[in-house]
Structure formats: C-alpha cells, structure tokens
Image (tube, rainbow, N blue to C red):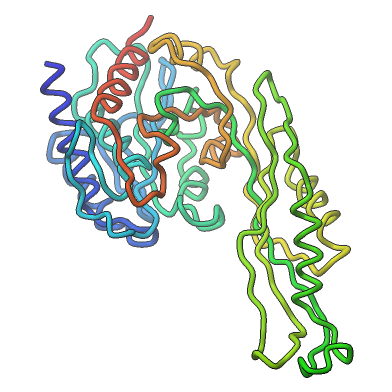
Length: 356
C-alpha cells in the first residue's frame, strides 16, 4: 500500500512539474486539475480567476480545515521537463509547490473515510508575484464560506515542519538625484551613483534584528536587491535607482515597517514603497495546530519568509505552513522533492484529518 502511494505521488508530482504554470499562465493547469477531480466524482468548482475549490467550502457541524496551495511557479531555468531520479522528483516547482499539489489532489481523490473534520482544497494562482496580484485575496473576499474555516494549512515548503506566522515583505524603489556633467570635470557635477554608494553602504550596516513573537524568533533584514544608473562612460550621471527589500516580523504592523525603512533611506534619497505584504501572526494556540503537530510529531518553527498565511490571517482565518518541500530547494535550478517526504506529508495529513 505504501509503495502504491509513493508511486502515485511521484507520478502525479512529475506530471504537475511537466505542466507549465508560470505566474499568469496557470489557467491550463487549473482547468486540468478541475477536470480530473470532476471526472473522479469529486465535488469541485471553477472559482474563477485561476482558482479551484474542492470538497467542503462552508463550515458545517464539524471543524472545517482547508488545505491551500498555489498553482504557479517562478520562470523556468532549464529545469522542465522534470525527471524521477534517486528517490526524488526533480524539476521546476517540485518543492514549491507541485509536490504539495500532488498530496492535496491525492487526498481529494481518496479522502480518508474516518475524518473527524471537513476538508476543503483551495488552489489559486499568481502567488509568486507581488501580493496585490495574488488570486487568493480576491477569492477569500468573494467566497465567505472559506472565511469560516477553523484552520488553513498552506502547503508551502517547510521540510515537514509546522512553520507558523510569516514575515512581512516591503519592496521599494530608492532614487538618488545628482547633477550630470562631463566625467573629465566631475567637480562641476554631482554624481548620483556616488550618492547611491554612500546610501547603500549605510543601509548595508543595518544589522539583522531578531524579534520574538509568541515564543518564535523571526529575523528582520533589509537588502538592496538591484541597482541601475549611468548615461555614458564619459558622463557623470544625475540619477541612480536601487531596489530595496525589507522583511519584518509578526507584531510589527505595515505602517511601522514602512516608517522604519523611510528612516534609514530618506537621508540619502527618495524612497517610494511599491508593495507591502503584511506579516502574519503565529497561530500555534489554535487547538487544530496542536493536533496537526501531534499527527506527525512535528517541530514548530518560525516562517522566515512571506507566505499566503498572511492573506488568510487578513481574512480572519488562522493559518500555518506545512509541506513536504524543502525551503532551500525553492526557486533553484536543481529543485527537487523527495518521494519519501511526499508520502510522509500525506500520511501526517491523513492522521490529522482523522484524529478524535
């Protein structure tokens, strides 16, 4: 039986890896998954905008648990089609999160008969883009039944741990202004790239800050992730632009995070916040989270990244991260997920859904 499950999960993960679904191009995969579920007699719905719902979508007499995951991947890096090798499925999105999708679809097709909760499956697109483009927030807004869920398990890669909460994520554009001039007489100009160098050096000196929230320690970090400037080799430039990213911990609100970033950056240049995806609280006090942990003797860790648990939290739903993928594999050229991890996640969720 275990061998059959491993074979099914491996084959399904590989098929999902081989189905292109880069962000904004998820619709064919959404349609394919929906058709397979319906063909097997699963109650499944095209929820619009590359979203698929299966199983329970409203709360009844039993607790409602949602398993949620995104259909999209980052762009390919020569790693599609995938392959099965060395007990792992290799290829684009294997860890983040086609392996998790395979587990969710398998549970939808063959739900454990002794469940003590109602199970809903939530699949959505555009998670790998800025949160303003995510399909999940609008889905939660137009499907009120989902907002009554007792717990959402977002199956982001966690290497089999429960990862609670998530960091907030600010992306901003930092522009440095100067005065252009001839590079032979730079004293008559004001070099914007030199201004940028001084500002970036000051930001690089900002030390990571560790903040503890509900017993879990998150690390707040700020990084320059891109820089552009220059006119010609013999021209002192009058403008330079840098991309800045701030990750902030639960317990710090979005406005406070932006004010912190402005305090660091404004003395050197003009900062414009492009997006701010709020952090999510730690939901470990929810009894169902304890039940999930007990189902697999799972450790609990802070989520040192942003994930859609924040979108569920904004909709009033407790959510945690749990998935078979390894976070270190996400978005890498050599991305892969172990078949044993797929089986382990499936078995843990089966026990969780059936515990008294």
